[in-house]
Length: 170
Image 1: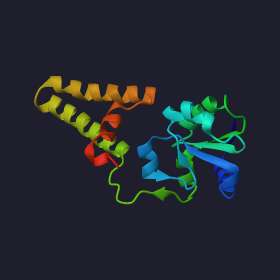
Image 2: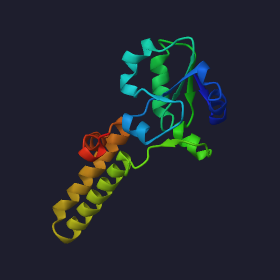
Image 3: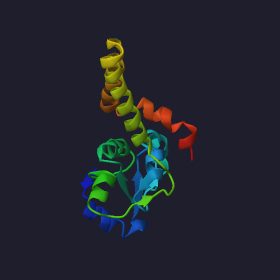
């Protein structure tokens, strides 16, 4: 595995026939915003998909910030030796001012929905704890603990639940 920066990725994208561009974010994240020429293979599906990818090409792996793509590169290294991890992922790509493909009319992303619900539940717990009953403060503690777990495990139960909601189905 070799780490590449955004400028190297830009050069690689000029010759898409030499590379397989893989984005390991979730289907929802990918459909909301992506780099052109990248295909979506969520991290959880890579184990069964990797053996079927062309080995004659370079594999260029990206995600949101570079953390999941680094994990994916380690996983894929057992199948292939020409693997490139995009440092900083799509966040760095956008920060550098490069174009992305965005889904039109999508509304609010799942992560923003999570942030809105968590913020509302935390604020509600604190305010109700202050003005109604002290025990409502436990609502804020529960939500905070859930966010801590989500950050440590890179798994968001609320995000998974929201992805199944009717308004988030594609």
